[in-house]
Length: 546
Ligand code: TEU
Ligand code: CA
Image (cartoon, rainbow, N blue to C red; front, side, top):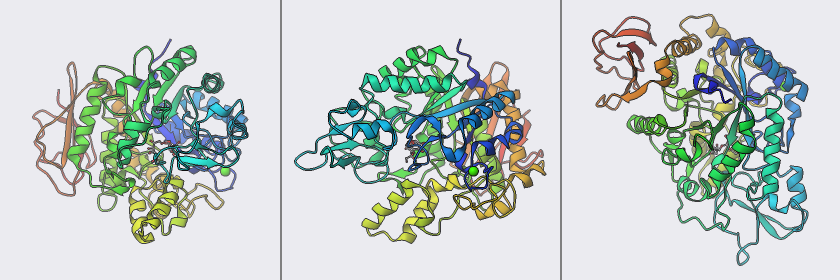
């Protein structure tokens, strides 16, 4: 029986390396998470999504797995994992694990065997191709710079890696490989894991002729050549029949190239996933060159994307809403004003996240308004995407200061600074040297400080979670954006039967006129309870209208 618990859930994403370090080695770990269970429970969330905790050389933050059945030693032991799972369940919180299906680490035994010989029984677990006229098999670029092909001199062939060289793509055309992946899913589901976040599932079916891309726009290359391949629906349906249908498991698909137009391919009632992440807004400020080629975004584009995505799920499947995660800058720095209106815009974004239709995912630290950090040199970066981005920029003659300006705005390091528990130098994250420096503003932005105040971002987050739980209309009600509210206001109705709620958000530093409907009573606001004629800078207000 498939319970739809996930449709009622608010999910808290934990990036284990940066959450809490229990043994002083400067690296977050499972026992660190165990020590914060009461805090997690106090948020009112119903599930935790853990970024990968499997054995990994950590070339890409653990998304390069060398043993799918073992816990990363830095994070702890399998016993620690079992205890964490049991304790989460004892606290009424479900666990979603992050499964990386599209690629393994190049240190996985399958790849070590595969590269030994063209005749290896593991050869077709990966994609090996001859070069063309002494060149690369095709012109595909990697997400992390350079070619998506790496030459192996030993067998004189290239292997495919859409991400880093140490992340060879798995060949799902191979039934043996698919069986291995199914067995890995069963291994974790047999332990009682409640959900699976399926990393880059959009790319697991390859166009095996590997045609050259005909565009230099990276996101277009993804959509046309990497994502939504010919056998994707078949592979998802097979995993559903052979594995997921045997468990009460929630599956959420992630991946570049998932659009409102192909969402239904992933969400078939019988053969699809429980839900997918919608990414439309996450790439809207990326130009043709991808992450390090930023372009301006407008609130109107933002509003349009939310409308299109809500319509995609109105009749089929179920959406998930997020405004930040470990792959993107901090939401208050990216979409809000993290200086003069830091508190108001943090609360405004929390209001948006928790009043939308679909399952909200809040990323660790966004509940207290953590902001982007500042890398003073590229050597401070701990992210292969930024490090490789710099290599590519240098070749183009871009100087480090200019590259850092972009990386400090768009890079993934921003989301990976350690959690800010208190105002002490290491923010209560570790008694040792943290693997990555904390944001210096941990002195003022931290859990301990905010737990003391009923007006803190943290308290506002807890109130918004309660409001969402008390008003089903915020979870499942119809979503109707207000038209003609100008380029600074994002306002929408949430309607169900006799229940009508209005959400009004001013995404600007200027006060704006906004006519509150007669008879409206404010349920929550980031300027306190008193009403106002319009919306003050970065004001968020939620009204019951009927
Ligand atoms: O990210 C896949 C993805 O959606 C990429 O577009 C993502 O934005 C990434 O940052 C590249 O720009 C998933 C994981 O979330 C990410 O952390 C991994 O690096 C990636 O897959 C490879 O496993
Ligand atoms: Ca540790």
